[in-house]
Image (cartoon, rainbow over all chains, first blue to last red):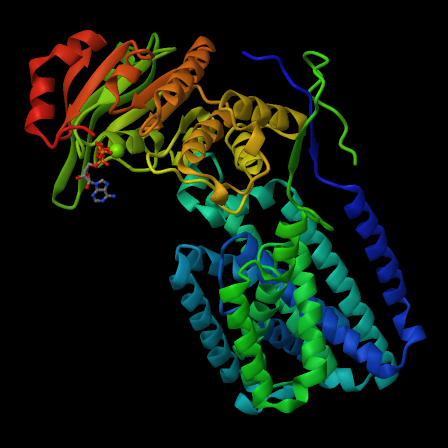
Length: 346
Length: 251
Ligand SMILES: Nc1ncnc2c1ncn2[C@@H]1O[C@H](COP(=O)(O)OP(=O)(O)OP(=O)(O)O)[C@@H](O)[C@H]1O
Ligand SMILES: [Mg+2]
């Protein structure tokens, strides 16, 4: 057929290379934060990292894979719960926090067999039911003291100053590793596949996508991420009350962060996490009105700015700082066959 | 059923053997025997509701037949799911386009090339560019698919199916509502594909477009094949004329 035209597929622009360097610089500074900043800042940043994990996880789940879950607090709570259990049976504090998340992720695998049969609204509500069930079962555990809850006593044995720094570094490493993992997965073959599933499951199957496997990978990853966020939360607050950890407010926060930042954009979830953190920092003490404000803002975004802040910027200006997608550019000249492949640049 | 496949094993590529499909009490396919040979192009016509799309769904693996079997390259694929069949080499388009709306046109094809086609890296990119060029979609390659109009959505159905590097292409009314010039372009595109040795099943109401591409025509009515043969003969067949006039008629 027609002569072959040369092209490049751009995945990484000069701008995104620049933003990667910026990210690296910020991370380097953050790594030293406990040496540079006072205790309040370190505590706040730890909280921010946990929010970022939750935001990016829910975005991977709902924004990329189309799995709109309103029950992610199930994993948040279970991560903390298993950490307490492990610590109770003598596992060291920080290994217990990590293992709590690992156990939750392992459990999410059989759960996925059940839940991923459900579609759309059924899945969303089903996940909420799972979260409620998880809470009811956890409350039955004598170690937990029913709704009263329990403290992770082993955490108290560590001196508060070092504990703050350990928590901070663990949260930072967890955030960086999880965000990098999600980014790498979304940029890879899986990312395109799950987006296809999100947009049209049957059509995705018709082009060869293994629908169940794709969904399951994201489901388990998000379970692990939310569970680790939960056990990190436990590390900062020490006490565990089932109603708090399995509360639906966690999912409300995740939805808020992702909708405001930009559903289905990697940068948006990060932006949303930062915005939520700032709003909470400024207005978090105002009680009920704070929650009402969050809800209202979420609805306004869903109605009038459905692609969120970052999605809108991306559409308007074609800016991609941390791109997971592909951009095709045809080259003018036609040096002949075999010239199709050029190294991506610019 | 085994002998149906065996009897034509020499060059039969895709076979539906006594395929039946019910939806509850409704019988939509009532014992359809269908054979597509290597490199062959078959057109399917029939009144609305005849079961054409259902047959295509059964061949592509989107529906499991209520009875009967489907063979591809001599192997039984009746219980093979749609994704696996695509990876084996059966690609399809959808009567009502089903683009991946949140992804760009290029990314739509890329999913197909990497999963269905098993390609990666530059080879996958090249495959997508080839498909998009053939379907005249290069200029919209970076648009999100949800922003496309109907014509481009239909083209994308074809481009995305092609990106999977199929052996058989199952097309469901991709020519509906086209202008003469667009229809000519489509025919040219399909003829290029035929030249590459692709086997083809094409459901289409616009028979004069269809007959420029296919060498065999099948007429389906009420879940049964009522005519099968050379296009001219099938068009002239009394039963076919009856089906169209007696039925709801074709659009
Ligand atoms: N999933 C389904 N569930 C129930 N009934 C169905 C389903 N799919 C198709 N049908 C019915 O089967 C019959 C045949 O439908 P089909 O789509 O195969 O017809 P068609 O020949 O493609 O028609 P058209 O030319 O209008 O596209 C119709 O009566 C339709 O309502
Ligand atoms: Mg149809």
